[in-house]
Length: 460
Image (tube, rainbow, N blue to C red; front, side, top):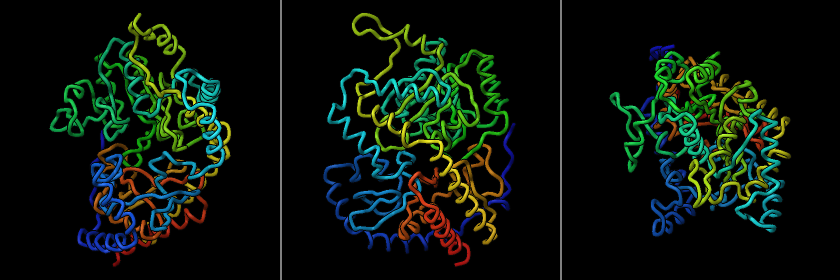
């Protein structure tokens, strides 16, 4: 199915002068409220590029640098004592909230016993057993980030198929790896960022999401090793699959000898057992990441029994036999496996997921109501706990249709406006999301502050 042309009368376009005025006013207020962060940044600039340990911590935000001091429940606090209800939950890496006792105890207990041995622990077995029962994917391996999981998956798929190429969908994010950090420009694939090898882009094919005809044309060449996709696209606002798209994708990959990976690094937080369980999806691989929302660095990937048997037959036996290039020194470490087990047994329960899904619906309903009250050509995204404001009257079916909802200048102004009022809504391409720590009152408060911002933007 091809995309439709977006009618400019059915989308919200913010007044640029008004956006700039609000942004400047709020940034000035923010600077006054965060003087301790400003002082820390001046100190940090002497020892870290841009004054941060990870460039994302500076590059994501247009306002003065904010430092965090501590967190509790749904909130974190800066060095000046200002509190922020985290609506992007640290880009889904803190969906359970700050200071959860069960995870704190698991970390402390395991660290005392030993953080890592480069040997398996029973916790790894239990975690794999729990994931197999939860998702239907029978065999598992563990990494420290979804980037590592997807790298391993690509290598396995290439080895099993004898092919090199990879299909991804426009607007994707599958980790900071060169094969997926690729964009199309003037009909050619080029690296998405500077400092990357253009050669790796040659094996990547980028297609529009929800377009089975485009997928069929590419896969019939029988030179694609792997199709890598989220079940719903989450890094360009939110794009849901059309009915039959994911099932058709599975059928096409099977017919053409192509492997399929469902990347649930983000969407595992949307439903109990992820969207794979909710929608009964079938694939060769499944990617998990973000520490399951615990804030602890670990990730995983599941595979069918056939794939697991292949991996087992092609292990890399050091100094004796060259196998598939998998693994990492800290992969499957005892500390992260203890946390993963505890998360699955005690925190990520079906009841907890049901609760945040209700909160997500509450947030989406509130956003829809404020759009009606302000007569905006907008509506809410919604999928389980995830919501947000779609700046068009129709929900997007692919990246090109989602792009108008990522008005960067407007979202910069909104971020600092909300931060000054106690809400952290920071990532332009994702969220907000109800977390396991949010209360109904905090969700209502978010919608109210968003309404204040939109009303000031449109009415002055």
